[in-house]
Image 1: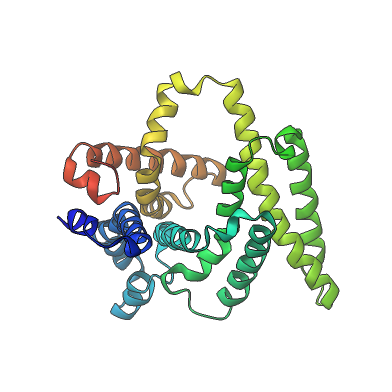
Image 2: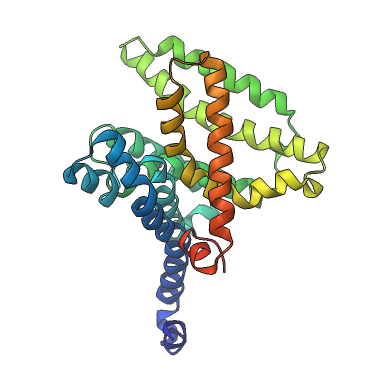
Length: 279
């Protein structure tokens, strides 16, 4: 009914209508799962394990300043909103680069000094990588596609070394180099991941791999539920297993249990909607 009524709006409201429908869609896919998983899973378990007060719950989960693993949902929602608003500017490559640098700097500076309400500063930090992904998709003939994947790995390691070497030096120049190296390391890290995964995708028949397709389908839901499982395995096994074995057991148990939860939730229409999946 709402969608039908919006169709009757004057043409002048076309942009606002599209933006509204876009926001509603993203809210269904990202904010509804946030509320659902926070209420039935994250908040209850966190309160039991960490004795959170009402103030803690309001700050962390209502204002979303530090909502455990659910930060990703709010961050992504914020980024989608930002990109919609500035999408026309981003068509210009120079402006896209400028926006990316300024956005990351805003997130870096403000995130260290101001409350991260609704993960706003985290969104500014991640906006450059969303823009980078857009540009890579737009420019499939870009020279970056022709570079060997190992080069991105080398650049990532080099920038990491530079970052570590300048980390403890308080001189203004070193702090500036450190900041540039940190940002560049994130960018090349994203590029490295993308191109190495692209290379692997060309080598592996992943479309016919049932295990890969299962995790592709359930990955988001597994992510939403995995962290609290790890809390319990740490409590139960800490000090009882070799640390390396402990890490492996944590991974296997968290992956298995969160996969089971995902499969169960995907079986029913109502729960599919509540975790942001299409009907």
